[in-house]
Amino acid sequence: MINNPIRFHWSLSQVGDNFRATGEQKELTGLLNFEEQLKLCRKAEENGIDSILMAIGFTRPDPLLLTVALGQETSHVKFLVAVRSGLITPTYFVQQLNTASTLIGDRIHINVVNGHTPDELKYYGDFKDKKQRNERTQEFVEICNRFWMDKAPVNFYGTYYQIENGIIKTPYNSEKGRPEVYISGNSKQAIDLVTTQGDCLWRFPDTPEALAPIIAPVLASGKEVGLLMSIIARPTQEAAELATTNLLKNFIGNTKKVHKGYNERYDSQGFKEIIEKAFTDRSTWITPYLWNGAVPYMGAPSIAIVGSYENIAKALLIYKKIGVSQFLFIGWPDIEEIEHFGQGVLPLVRKMESKEELKAVNIRQ
Image (cartoon, rainbow, N blue to C red; front, side, top):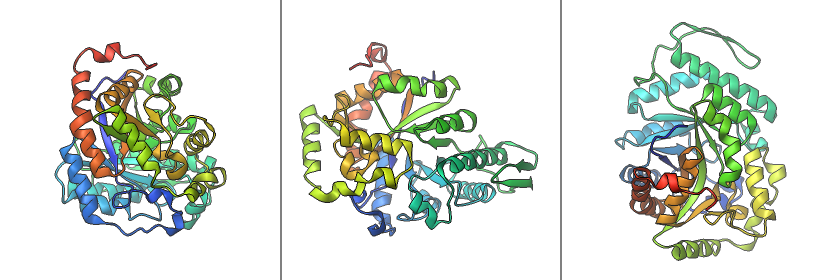
């Protein structure tokens, strides 16, 4: 099991609009507030964040172009750039990413996603079903890795891609020769892909007891596991729980309708699991620190770790004890939350990691 210090990441998804996820997709804007996004990136650098998630979709600017712009205005924070196999050929994607690395250095990870909303995928001309997208993504990532790691010309003859004597003359700007590859998904297909072609699996959280056997094959392959969630951290537990109450006051009664039709809207296993649980469970607390009260209003990524600085640090170590080594957070608002994390939670995590506290952590807490 990998026992390095936990790495932390932050999402750029809602900067400038805290409740973006409560709106209908077709009503959202893809215009960016560059100054607000740059502010978050600089706060990330000040608060121990490894990378910034650059999401993809028709309601957002292009993630790679935005990465280059933000990278030139920051010094060391990295960027976790989302990519879908149906939008670009693997050869051209490698060429683009390698070019970006010459402009901002070895500061790019990639986040491989399949897309979770079939109607939106069709905007890009992608009419493949989920099974086909999984198969195509497998080929896409394998080809990218061949370009990054193989010295000889790349030849590949698959169902979705055929490459003959492929060569890219712009190398990736790193001693490793390639970016880190994150695979997103709660499905078995995502697990299989990360064990063969990736470095880390991104998935939504669950109780440690439920999660441990699911992620065991990933850990056994020598790869890492990360959890995507929101965070509400405050100096005391009472203040954190009050923040959840105040958060829900922002939502009008009909905002649940945005995510109520999740079975028709999404074909993502992870999205469906989280949203269904939030709509059907009597309690909004999955564990004493894992809260899904905002999910009916803001969707699956709003499942949140909630608590005092100390309780959140302990909860993160509980997950580390079962093998989770990375976390990706969203906050409301992000600037305030990233400061709570960096100044309150992170020092405790590092202190606990360096002592014997991890051995004493009980995953049933």
